[in-house]
Image (cartoon, rainbow, N blue to C red; front, side):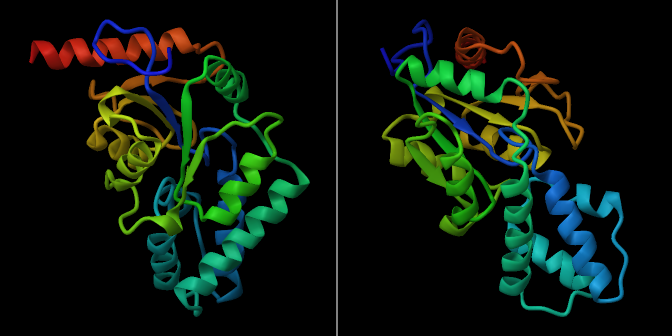
Length: 232
C-alpha cells in the first residue's frame, strides 16, 4: 500500500525531503562561500548573517550578499556559491544522522519521495546521485519555482507532480523557513532542528535528529495531524 485514503490508513502517500541541513549537512559549505565572497569585496560576514539565510531561496541570499558589498550580479553570486559548495561535497559529502536509513526504509516500503530544496537543480541532482539506491522519484529545486520557501509553492509542486494529495504527505525540514513552507502547503511536517532553532508552536513535530526515526513514526505524525484537523 503506497497511498493513504483516510486518517486511519497506515502510510503517507509521499515523503518530501528538504536537502541542505536535513538530508546532508551542507550549511557550513554555504557559509564558508558567503564569508569568502564578502571578504573578497571588502566586507565582513558573521555567523549570524549566514544563519539568517538558512532555508532561504538563493535569489534572496544573493540580494543580501549584494547588500553586504558583493559587487556581482545575482546570477554570478548564485553560480559562485553553488560551485563552491559542489567543490566541498565532492571532497566530503556529510550525510545527516539517520537520513539515509529512513529514506531507505521509505523506499523499501514503495512510498513516493521528492527532494524539495532551494538549492539549484544541478546541485540537488548531484547529491541525489550519490545515494547508493534510487532515493527520489522527483527533484523540485530553487530554479524550478517562482516562489521560494517559506512560500508553499515548492511542496505543492512536488505533491502535484507526484500525483498525491499534499494533505496526505509528510515533509521533513530543518529550518524555520522550510518548516513554514511545508506547514503552509498542508503537509504533516517533521522539523529536525540543526543549525537554526525551530519554534515550538505545535504546528509541526519536533525532533533533534533523524537517528532512530522510522516510517512508523512518520505514519503516526500524519495520523495525529489528521485527527487534529478532524477535531478542529
